[in-house]
Image 1 (cartoon, rainbow, N blue to C red):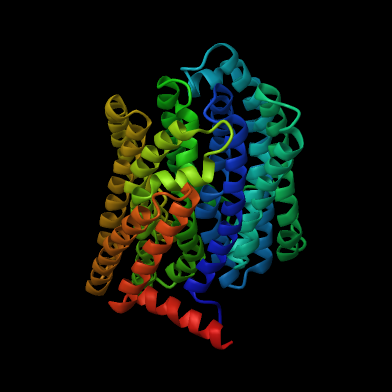
Image 2 (tube, one colour):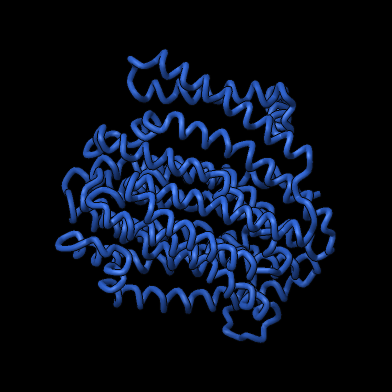
Length: 513
């Protein structure tokens, strides 16, 4: 019997958690050496560009188009055909990645002016140099995304999502080795080279297991390989949808560059924290669900699809809602504990905390988007999520321009939060029309329980923060989060939330095992 969706999601979350913990170490060291300086702005902007290419040609886009077809072939016993499909897909990806990386290096000045129009002088020149160094990394990440697609289909989730830890380790090692002897632009250049090495390590650790799963796979650029054309037809709309998402991120960078020194960097610090629950719970649930949804869709059993989507939505809400409330309540001690060191001072902490609080408003929407989009992907519809994303982008960008006039970088985050809820609301509405109601009265009662637990957690966090006001900021952070978590767990368990009861059962099994 295959593992349950909850157990599979736990494997994804475990891999992501390892990566994210190292990511926080990485970012704390980055904050120590670069703070919110022009060099930090340049590095953030330069890293944004290859990430756009990586996300357009790999990761989520490849998973949405490749996994449903590949998993369907395996489920039907077409193992050799699935291997041929895997070989063709990786061949096309390698070709596209090489072309994209080459164009990125050549067009680095143009791309820099497009993404960060507010940069000039030395900051612009450094950004151009960093873009040229980092662009080859995007090609490596795309190949890594192919590995992720194969590993996910075969339920090897932990390796797929823990592999990026090596990228973080390469950053950390570079800063440890060079931070004491370099500074400014020289250190940023060394760090960019270290990031490229880290991407190679990330791919290297995934390849052996991937190749064992597709033993005998051979490269091919033949469009007539069974499954290739359906993958391509599904992939193009998904790429467009991912492009819209990336455009949203680029717009944030563009707007931040217009707000002056430090704005782009502070958005990056806040996003790193805000995206933790989105990755741990939204991405993990959606990633584990997509192969199973794809198998279910082959049976045309909408009851199974609705139940799986509803369970995923309830699980996401149980973890993401309290995370958002905790971030909003404890933004300053959280940011201070993570980043306040070296060049990152108390003023920087306050600014980043305001941005984190603004991002927290939209976390539930951001976390649920990928799950509901996966429902469409499993049904073979990759176009509807794109149309919805276009509308959400137009709204979020317009509101970001408006809100930044009053709230600075936090206004950009508020615009993104609003767009996320519009996106997920439209996805849920259209999906309900397609397969019927996804949420049940029990799910809505569970959401009320989550909100009651969250409000109780906020009160406990405030109380702990006041009691520990004279202590170092790290103690305030740990005490506040501990008080919040304990109160939330007790209330949701006492009111019978299914996820709280499931977690308690798991803990009891561990205690007796």
